[in-house]
Image 1 (cartoon, rainbow, N blue to C red):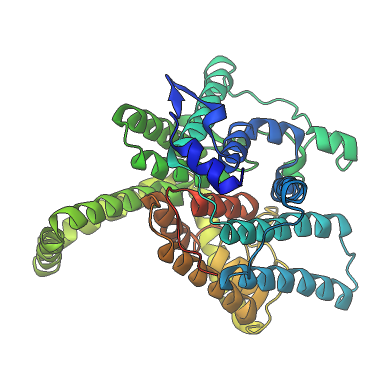
Image 2 (cartoon, rainbow, N blue to C red; image 1 turned 90 degrees about the horizontal axis):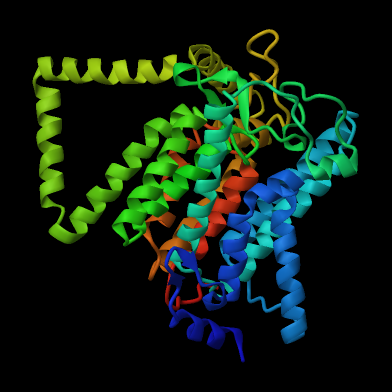
Length: 446
């Protein structure tokens, strides 16, 4: 029986038995997505997160070849082509830079780069060619399993063992590959070690910054922020509230201040949009006009609001005041350095802005300023913007059946891109995940 007919039959069956999902009632894409999200702790322990995109596509290719004698791919979309050009430009440019400066070429890192990025591009191409959709409830259930695992981990690590320091074990892949030696040193080889929290960074009330299974806290924050948005699309109120509460708590323990500030804004924007679609936009726009007029026309009100805003920003900044100051200096020196090589960029990070702090270098801590404009110049930045805009347009064109979380994830990423340097490997997989969540048939945009 053809896959699309199997998918249509499966969608008519009951999805849950109590709190458990009925595995046999899932489509093949849903099984792949559900298993991979639920087993993220296993991939972390094994140490193969960088290879997941390629491994998933190789599995799909094997299945397609076995059942159809070929991999069913249509003409690639503009966003798939743009992402291919961007990834290739970045890879080839870095190799040429290393050759031009007599730097040592890191073949291992280049292979990892190729496996992830080209695996991701092939996955995106396959998803768009075959109109792959995964039901929101399946993704939400898998995310719930993941959140429960992280909460249990936090209870054991923080409350029972007190978040004490320990010698970090290496991943299984690192042990087999022999690519790391001795104990972990700050700033080197994070992906080779199992580090669920960073004891040298503190958060509120002395609690550690947790990353759980996502290498660094910033990646954790991106993942659980998306789960936060997914929870708001769940129709079951109890499930929605529990998942929202659990994932929002994980956002807090990540200690990622930019997500702390922007996620509530995204949630407010979401409900404003929903209210406007149901009741009309007259009331929200009228309230906005009243607030704007009151704020700008009455100095005492303006001063009070500014005082509250500055107080809140200062409070968030004081959580890690030294980091706030260093980030400000990084952004300042990065902006000053961009005009030195505006067309093709610098390709490597610059000098440290604080003696002894190797991670605080010019060209870091911002995706737009650092990864794009500083490293790759105007050329690389324009190529990426073509991908991002065309991908957002494709999402809109295929919006039927999509939950709001897919669109608000893109908004969140866009707003964060000036103040965060994404963990791109996980961040891009999240974008791909958002692209396949939904229900119903969609029009092929290729």
